[in-house]
Image 1: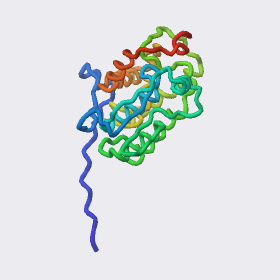
Image 2 (image 1 turned 90 degrees about the vertical axis):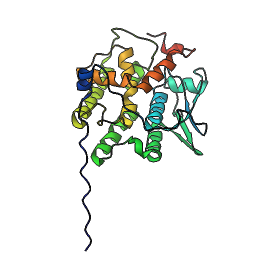
Image 3 (image 1 turned 180 degrees about the vertical axis):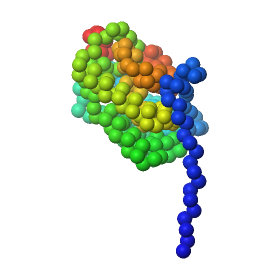
Image 4 (image 1 turned 135 degrees about the vertical axis):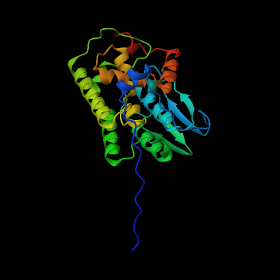
Length: 258
């Protein structure tokens, strides 16, 4: 009877937490996206909205960059009626970001994430181990469907800073839950990212929260603060922030109230 050969033992994953990595080197570790021929590809398009205000566009953009898939960026103007409705949480359906790749059109951030995981498997947007993969999907789904108080009271606004911003109790409950998720993941999988040494769907989903904590001067525990600094120092995040600061238009409804 034929016998199955044992698979070679896996190499131990890097187990440095975000806080330890920053403390030892003085710099946040930077993950490398899978090699790509170029950052742009005219056969693949990612449609996004305002880089200053749209957290969903940021998530879709980060996922595509983390996957290493070259794409051409198409930015809808913030004064477009449908764009404003989505950013102001007045739309019944979110159709942006939207990825078009090889004749396939995919919208909704989680759908884009799952599609990219299929077409770019070497990026490991989902962890390889089944338990970790299920965990990654669960917390990504929680970000996708939950935390409405945080979204409405602390909207993404990268060009502004509001020191000593008043955090209401419902938003604080969302913040407490998010930081608990981060601490659990960093402790369980060893950091520096939520599921270990590689960036996953979860890191892209929670990245806009890091910008909100910075914008509204949200105080969090040291582990969560180190993770925020790690994500904000990723080259893709720096590129997005630079683009947000160069946008010509403001959405008054998101600026005049603060």
